[in-house]
Every structure is written in structure tokens, then in C-alpha cells.
Image (cartoon, rainbow, N blue to C red; front, side):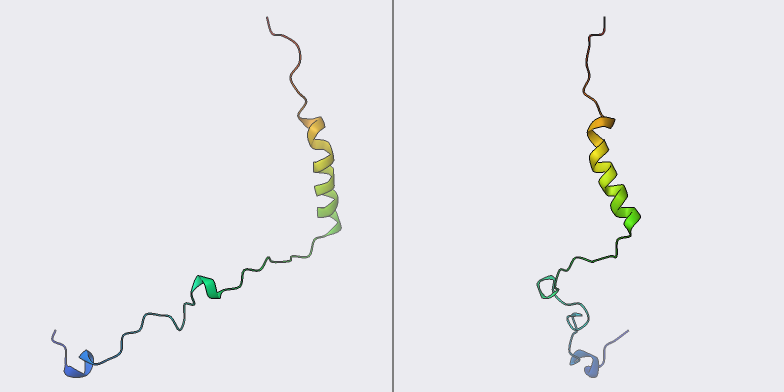
Length: 61
């Protein structure tokens, strides 16, 4: 295939119009609505974690 002179003078596109730079994007945390059961589960896990993983005690002979 040979290039015609029209192809040689076409402007090259780098995709900047469709792909913005990372610095130009605003980072935002998604705020998902939390249900009451999710909040209760989270609280229960935080409160029960130390009890569910007791420290080792005693000696093994």
C-alpha cells in the first residue's frame, strides 16, 4: 500500500480529546447509601474482633 499525499498531511491524533490526563480527573469517593444492617454488622465486627481472637495461653508439652 502506498500513501497518497493527502494521507501524509493529515494531523495525527493522540486521543487527548477522549482520554484526559490523570491530573485533570477529580478523585472523589463514591458515597453509597449504607443500610442499617450494614452499620450494625460493622459495629458488631469491631466490638467482637478481640473476643474472637484470644491470645494464646498455656504451654504445650
